Length: 633
Image 1 (cartoon, rainbow, N blue to C red):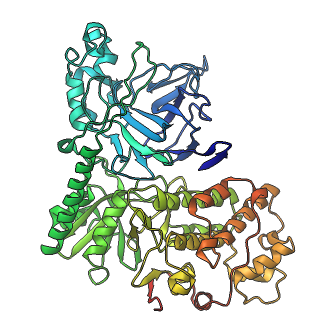
Image 2: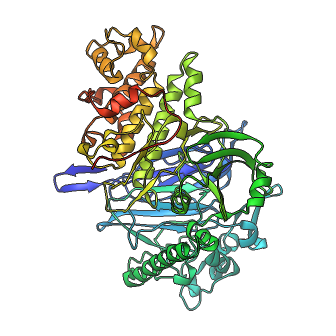
């Protein structure tokens, strides 16, 4: 986001904080600069996310609290880990009490650049990963995800009952000048690493451990970058401890022992470039070796960084494929359980050998394993054993959006839930297009590929048709167009309408939103005053908009607040299905439109209706399968 001032254009970063833990997390935000962020603390349930707009020239921290509760007798709010000692959900905005927690420090737009550091100097309570939206040689994903039972020294373990919940740092635990690098120990020569710092140094080579650590902890980015901060990420952070660079720690400015973290912005770009070149060479060699040896299993596993299961394990997980969840164009999905102590429910997709090829499989794995967002289905593992290929996902107990829509259509619509679903899907697509490691265009957004968890949080699934974009490319060249009739964009049918791109997903999203509100249900057309009930459905929506009678099709019992929600969804859906891709808003703008005021939305131009894809849509009954079309030359 940008704001214009008398001195030029200033960038504002969006910090998306998401919780993928199995418990509620209470994020903490603290600012050393003014203005502060809009909140200093709030609750984030499992699967939830929240966007925070960081002020210009913001410098502050983000951490998480766990096992929080309010004392019924005193009203005091406190947390077992990461507590900020305010006695409230919001933390004090004038001082900060350091606690045993994992921290992410940000210094945004400092001299034209951003920088951030994930720090375990004060201890560790939650896995954290920071993903910048715009990658470069120095702007990379960093974080710290460890097994406390293996990493935390026994004398520094924090328990709640019998459960290990955090690890104190040596300084936090003892407070001695030696462990905190104070007084005569305040030098690199005298401040020596402890068991704690050594253990975390090995486990999290990109995290800041202690004052005189030599690791590469500060990540440098451009000042137009947004960030996703994930608690308990499902993706694995690459361990590059053998290719370490000399990036210095980002500073914190206050703590309860009056210490300061030194900010050193001298970055060895050459060494970072070497790391990137080496990593690129490894990927190239991996792909080449994969092709030469029939996609060698070890190479694939190294490339996608996911747990690999044997086909025998897949059979055991699914009880010999006893419970079918559904069938799609690329395979059958079964319900199962992970073969570990958690016994977590999973959805396991067996890929048909006759559909797709090894490259499709690897692309899906690579793209999904690097995607981490609350509105994206998480990937747990894979099987690649001869002709047997499977992908293991998190299980979504409420099924797909199309089933949810059909249920709600038969009874009173809960417009607030449908609105929240629309916003969640928009956020997930915005993440795929702009913020994940590999820029992803889905090309088959439809209700069947949007799944619902136990809290009706929507998650985008099925990346079998995804095409990975290079960072600097905005339009994708496809040899054959893929998608589902009824949701596919006109430019995918014919290049006369432009090139297939992320805007193709925007079109599909608009069709999904219009279907969610019932506008795509042709049986409802008769409720409108339009004479021609066989007309392309946006046409009669526009006619009713002109008559200010849009809500007539939803009955007479709709409340005023619900009417505003529905009208906003209608307008956003119509903007998304504009014929010309350049007229459609990007997904970031779509999110802003949905979350903004209805009064700020204008009625978009009417899309053309005499198009070949309209005829195709009208002749097909909501196709369940993925179809392929050749793009006219």
